Amino acid sequence: MHVTAIANQKGGVGKTTTAINMAAGLANAGKKVLLVDFDPQANASSGIGLNTDEHESSYQALISKLSLAELVVPTRIPQLDIVPAEMDLAGVEIELAGRDDQIMSLRNALAPIKESGQYDFCLIDTPPSLGILMTSALTAADDVLIPLQCEWFGLEGLAKIVQIIQQISQSGSNPDLVIGGILMTMYDNRTNLSKSVVEEVKNFFPEEVYSAIIPRTIRISESPSHGLTIFEHDKSGTGAAAYKRAVKEFLTRH
Ligand SMILES: Nc1ncnc2c1ncn2[C@@H]1O[C@H](COP(=O)(O)OP(=O)(O)OP(=O)(O)O)[C@@H](O)[C@H]1O
Ligand SMILES: [Mg+2]
Picture 1 (cartoon, rainbow, N blue to C red):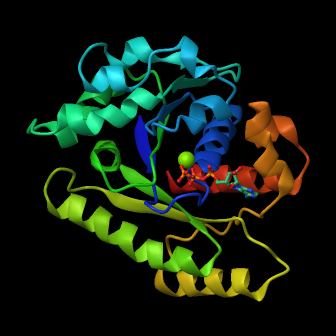
Picture 2: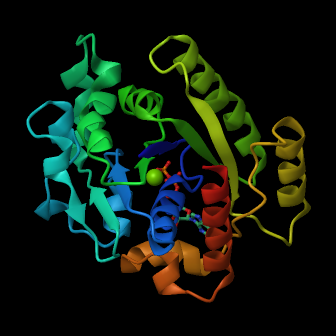
């Protein structure tokens, strides 16, 4: 099982949208996928159509109440399971503070699932903050997919997340962690800004940037309110086509 954290400490850049649609796209491509919602906002859980009140959250595994395997819930999409989140996950910062294995919590919780061999890929949706949830997710991951909004401020955020990834790998808690890719999101082909941001990022990270670029579309933004992936909500639209290309590229890279 290959574990990819979808991370960027900047808020609203398309992490959750990417987590949901990449997970669904990989499942549609015949892979067995586990999506771990690791954000107290629980947007990935609700965005895929789950009522989070009805399920235990990933928090239970972190405080060692339940195993992660016990928290897995199937989705209506064949081959795609999810470990949902809930607001209680926000309490993990306090709960784990002072425990010396805190950064390893998710890695340890994932280990039995990894060993079981039941999934090809695990995608972790992370919150927009630099706390213990983000660092635990980066410690649990083999690589990081960074969604980057095609806006000027996106570039500033990129330097920060790259630095964090380096710190995690140099700290020894996850020496093999690498950037698996940078996915440009919310591209607006009517603006020069979108074009120049993509060019700028390509200059610095020619290998990492996906050639698939996710356009800004109304269909993508409205799909979570219906609890649907873009492949269900608008399967022949430009958003679905772009995420399908990104999935294909993801599979080539892994
Ligand atoms: N390609 C897109 N086109 C249009 N709207 C989009 C696109 N991608 C995401 N959005 C919308 O932008 C908002 C932020 O997206 P999303 O929730 O995926 O970001 P996020 O990085 O997970 O946010 P947070 O940091 O709060 O977790 C949402 O309302 C989402 O529906
Ligand atoms: Mg999110």
